[in-house]
Amino acid sequence: MNNGLDFETAAMLTDLPMKLLRKMHREYIIEEPVGDMELRGLAMIRDVWHREWFLRMALSYFSHARRLELIQKPELTRVERYILKFYLNAREGERIGIIDVISLVDHFFKTKVTPKQVRRIRSMAYEIRRGRSSESQSEAYLWKTGGTFLEITNRFVWNTGN
Image (cartoon, rainbow, N blue to C red; front, side):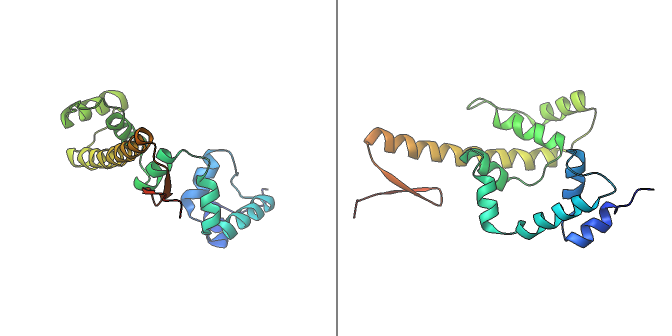
């Protein structure tokens, strides 16, 4: 007989989302039923889960562009991530039709997506790309002109040395 808790009970005890516990199980971090040691670990995670310093430190391992992607896009399914990457990896000025994307998804994933889903993800990709391009243009301008800058909430401000 296994002594442990199911995910639903563990989630209630730790106030962590079920989605997190399932993801940790898929990644072989915890097992079901959840044992005592795993429950202690989940309690420690719960203690730092919503603290800003923890989030800052966790996000610091990613590049600036990747952090923006993580913040700007919600949790996406595998197919939605494929569509997003498809648009993000498109060459500058390349036009990709919604019907083309739908047929590719149907071919590779054997699943259907609606034009509305594709438009929503395409607009996400365009927002991410616009953020990247405006950032890189600012950096290039400052580099070309020899300016120094302070980064404040993703905007570049001239450092006057005062």
